[in-house]
Image 1 (tube, rainbow, N blue to C red):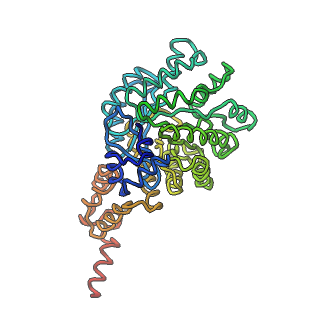
Image 2: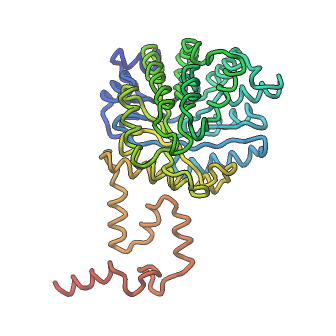
Image 3: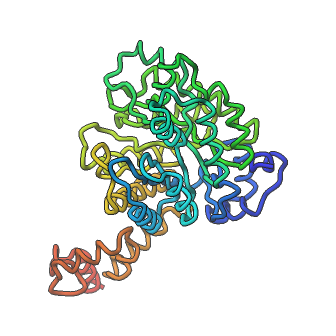
Length: 428
């Protein structure tokens, strides 16, 4: 039986107890939320890793994307990125490879990753079709499902599938007059296939088959937003909502069949619409875990999009988003370097942490209180240890060493904390 089926029967598993203990919630409540489809434990039964929970009342989790392209293939570098993203606190990793030995890279990632692994099967299917048949449009539904089944049986924990990108949504897109039609790579590949073959999306037509595959391995489906807005001008438009309505229906069918589901969301969204997008998803999809890319709150942040995404991610998380996909400084420019991955994870962790404080997640402020106490005590070792990047803090402090070891080189002898402490002691 799947996790949802067990939970519906009132069976609280050891796995649920482990996640509940880590999150500071009761196992019974978490099990009920899994049964209702508002929380998930996205771990394939063939991938023996420590389980995590994503959903209502749980810590906001983050995902980091890595992977090769035709322009750069280095398995060694991708494995180094995996090590870095795990070290700095990512809860999951997605392999978005479109070049080189894709299957071998995925297998290595599954062997080495201690966190949940996600993929986008349409990428591999498209690469195979382009290389073997000369065109993506020549891919068949069987080709796509063969890749999906391969990912599931190999132990992939969750897959992005753009099931809500229907012919009706494509017609809506044509009528909408968007500034930037589609920026979802998976969405664009499916749209190309649908247009050239004049057929409905096979992931939508054969959704029951997809559910059967996911159910067999207890693999979580991340229902992708192929119509997500790629610029602020297209945010929260009819095309986006059209797809979301379909995803809401598909979510219900999945939960009924015992398959865990996450809903993916935008994208590029103005700051004043971020909370609205979260509330719309939660209403339409009956509280299903919401997985957002950023969202990026401005389109002009090239080179700094990890910051624009962290701003949107903090607001989205505070409003109820459950899972943040990191964005690196090189988003929209090139494949991320190891350092880009590090920066992307750290700023996304900060966004998730800020959201958890705003949501009142149990224990979310513990580290902040410890940091404040270390600062009052001028305990530099404590401050460094509590930071998300201790190496950077230690390096920067050493670059301009203070004349007095207990203060920093910015305030020096005029350190506010030490000045007030001396004054108050004298007053006593």
